[in-house]
Image (cartoon, rainbow, N blue to C red; front, side, top):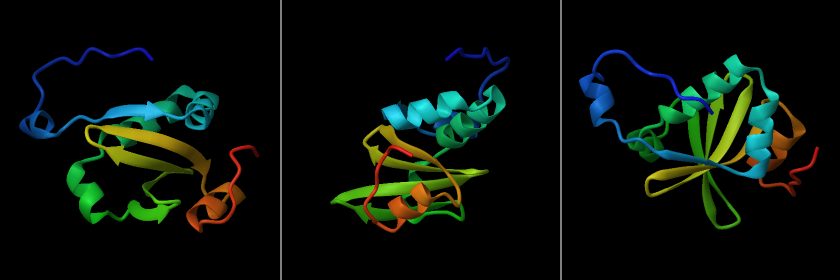
Length: 117
């Protein structure tokens, strides 16, 4: 994905914010690639703004739950729900699902889940 050059020095808040490495499963990457560029940028921005404090306490748009012995986070952004794990300095995006979809419901409520539609 192309990077953009930013003019000016980063703000103090931006300098103190840890930056997570974002990794994607095949499903999450395929779903991201299907979206228009502006939607892709919106999702990438939402994921890049995640802060450790938000992971610890949750927010209005982010929750946490366990499934199959793993701790997953669910980020709600626009029409999408992003399910990811946090390990050290990286976030692994397992699934990008449309809100109100059967797949979103199945995964969230720990029902048998298939990556295929």
